[in-house]
Image 1 (cartoon, chains in turn brown, blue, orange, green):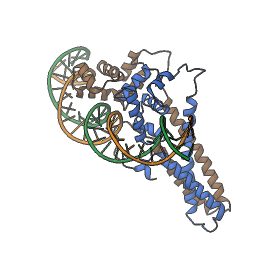
Image 2: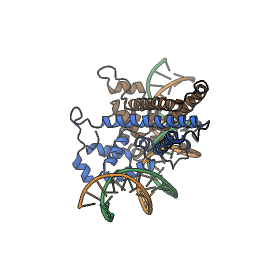
Image 3: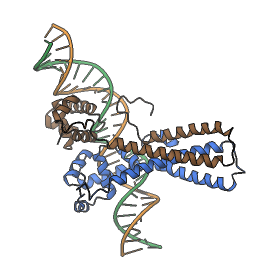
Image 4: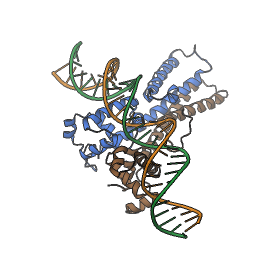
Length: 155
Length: 155
DNA sequence: ATTGTCGTCATACCTTCGGATGATTTTGGG
DNA sequence: CCCAAAATCATCCGAAGGTATGACGACAAT
């Protein structure tokens, strides 16, 4: 199930980090085993335990920090004082219809309600929103709203 | 560990791993300190190292996450003039946890991601959000975000 | 006339959300 | 200590959202 290729989105959670930690632990353990043959000291277990503990605790903290920092990272191009929304829109290749739908999504409407409001089918709304999410790099509508507001695409 | 590849629906979160790690770490430490001379097995080093590595990496991640989260919160007097409007909150009977989850929903996170951030199960997040929607009068999470911002519950 | 973009719609399939309900555990106050 | 509120976790199930793919007509630009 987890091995099914995700075409887009690249969702990775804390589990992956934990898995990485476990793998790293195994790796270090192997490394330690090889080293253990030459360095048979009485307190090697405690020493190595403490070392590994400190190392991985630091690694974990670093990982957590970078992860949260990446999530707290706001807009992509903060360069310049101000870039008008239209520029960002054309940069992302967002069409007027998609922008319209983004506004309605931000207003808390469902796809069905948007479809009724625009007199189109729900499938059309889905298509637009799907392409919109793709251009915005969002995987959920809430995320699309968040990114859209950050990019000043919507008030 | 077992929870990295579990079927969807039921999943005990990282907390169990943490708890397991703590218990195992303590147990092994006590074992080491008291009578490890009798139980010196060849695998004890691997097990010990792996456990400590996993435990402390998880602990480090948790530390980094919670530290950054807590540090980001208490910024009321200096810069953030945002007051969560406690009157409205108590009027609606919204608990702190529900408010916290509302913020994460507004950040565009999925239930699963919120669960991972808060170290609880997805079911818990669903329960909280469900009650939150009930109190807010929202039917969708996008609507909850909208209403929450209107009521100045979230920035 | 060909090409490209946009808007429209559809089908199929999977994931995520949300409601309803019940239960247990933690926690703080009287 | 006991109680109430809050928090946690679970299962079932339907609804909504999202992906992938294909198709068609309108329209503008080359």
